[in-house]
Length: 597
Ligand SMILES: *[C@@H]1O[C@H](CO)[C@@H](O)[C@H](O)[C@H]1NC(C)=O
Ligand SMILES: *[C@@H]1O[C@H](CO)[C@@H](O)[C@H](O)[C@H]1NC(C)=O
Ligand SMILES: *[C@@H]1O[C@H](CO)[C@@H](O)[C@H](O)[C@H]1NC(C)=O
Ligand SMILES: *[C@@H]1O[C@H](CO)[C@@H](O)[C@H](O)[C@H]1NC(C)=O
Ligand SMILES: *[C@@H]1O[C@H](CO)[C@@H](O)[C@H](O)[C@H]1NC(C)=O
Ligand SMILES: *[C@@H]1O[C@H](CO)[C@@H](O)[C@H](O)[C@H]1NC(C)=O
Ligand SMILES: *[C@@H]1O[C@H](CO)[C@@H](O)[C@H](O)[C@H]1NC(C)=O
Ligand SMILES: *[C@@H]1O[C@H](CO)[C@@H](O)[C@H](O)[C@H]1NC(C)=O
Ligand SMILES: *[C@@H]1O[C@H](CO)[C@@H](O)[C@H](O)[C@H]1NC(C)=O
Ligand SMILES: *[C@@H]1O[C@H](CO)[C@@H](O)[C@H](O)[C@H]1NC(C)=O
Ligand SMILES: [Cu+2]
Image (cartoon, rainbow, N blue to C red; front, side):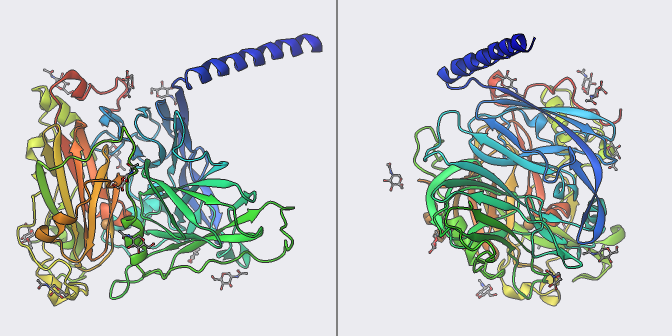
């Protein structure tokens, strides 16, 4: 009996081996990857406090999706939480697949409690690290995970010994649904309780003296590790260092970059990075530290956020002093924004055949000023501003603040587009034609980076009055679009990680102070600019991007700071169908959720 079953299992193994050999011969056929994401609430305890958090499959961070370029993915999302949920596949190009982009009321009706939905994704033409997260205000702090795309053929560098996802996040003792409500109500003094690395708070935090668990990365001397970093935090860009080690950055936003070496990484919310680290230090223990950057005073200050993990060399590798504390890296000042400016300025594309060429010129150019403004409460026309409770602070792009269509609208914008295109516009949501058009440029230019506008009061007050609308910008298929994002010093000087769904953007240039077309167009890098889905617009400065609007659909474009997007720093780009069946948006999937059923 035992003998028989052994023979059977050997046979099984032989078949498996045969299949593997056959697959290897054709360079791994594309695979269908399947996941089930059960969204539910769970109690977790940190810092002596028990908190109810919404998670996927009981995990924080959620499960990583790991695929090989060319694979197709099905994710069955089963909503056992009391919240409306959508999942966004951050950075995935989603060619002709806007239906699966996961933005509530923009691309789909949310998955309601006790409902489910299957997202079907093709992963083509991208390699590196991306991530997924709920596109639900507040909740993405606990609903996120890595989306890892391995090359079908080979890395353009020696294959690393190991790949390690590093998810930078935040722990909120505050209930996240409450946080979302607070942000909507114009109360935004909340801050996270801790920074986390792979969900762990680390030993800088404790509950009555008992330190929190920290991430430990075990390494072998001489080996190369690939860190796949993503910043899932709601509020901060992070500066990351490992004592005694350097990083070689090889990828950003699932695009390879020309490798460069640095001792510090800067990663804004929504950004991802692939960085190689060689375990070449004297065997021992070294802290990896992530510190949250913030704009200096007179901006309002929040307590410094910081977490650490430990890089630990294998025992027996000459690691004599086990008891010695880990070496601490010297971190940049949290206010030193030049760390971020230099890091992002060092990203460029490697010259690889097959990478898309940079279009030489743009068909349309937008100049988009990013800044705060305010709206009177209760629909009144005039009120006290500059932080008065009579008004509510909003974020704007060219002096208009984005408002999502109400869930009660019953038809998401993408469905409006699809049926409008087919001469069957539903009148329920008013149709896309009634959306507010994002202006090309601000109506009244001002000195955007005038430091006198930072403190709330008379200098900035005249610029505050603004309005809310569902802001859109329509592009013909194939339009080459230039956008200069000008960061204005109004009431704050945060940087803004601007994220575009469904497209990568060439980052042509960044600069300090006010953009000057005459001077700055000459500085555009049209030779080897990096391709990013999230461009960090520097504080008191600007960034210029170019992208080709060739993926039909309704794509969200927004700041990836949770507060900023929830108070309106967003717009949708409506991209029309191309001329052929292969360049037109296909019909919605059959099981696409309906709003009111
Ligand atoms: C823990 O909860 C208590 C009571 O709700 C609150 O006073 C305290 O600030 C919380 N601590 C942290 C670290 O959030
Ligand atoms: C998903 O919903 C469908 C229709 O309501 C139901 O038939 C199916 O069993 C559900 N699947 C899961 C995994 O809950
Ligand atoms: C994925 O690609 C296959 C093959 O081209 C195509 O038939 C399918 O419709 C695509 N699915 C999605 C969700 O884009
Ligand atoms: C615990 O945390 C408090 C507050 O951050 C700190 O003052 C104290 O030194 C910590 N204790 C330990 C043992 O780490
Ligand atoms: C790249 O980083 C170096 C420091 O490592 C800095 O001197 C340089 O200015 C950066 N490049 C750009 C374009 O910002
Ligand atoms: C790659 O591009 C850089 C910058 O344009 C150039 O200096 C270099 O010679 C190119 N290398 C190759 C191998 O083409
Ligand atoms: C128009 O679209 C609506 C919404 O999906 C659909 O119910 C209706 O049958 C369509 N009408 C026509 C004439 O195609
Ligand atoms: C804009 O403001 C800055 C300082 O806040 C000042 O140095 C600069 O001269 C101003 N520019 C113009 C054109 O007024
Ligand atoms: C901003 O928009 C509001 C509302 O339309 C308008 O009253 C105000 O003048 C605009 N401000 C600027 C600086 O353009
Ligand atoms: C959830 O979505 C449904 C249908 O789209 C909507 O009617 C309901 O108001 C939403 N609930 C919340 C809490 O937003
Ligand atoms: Cu922002």
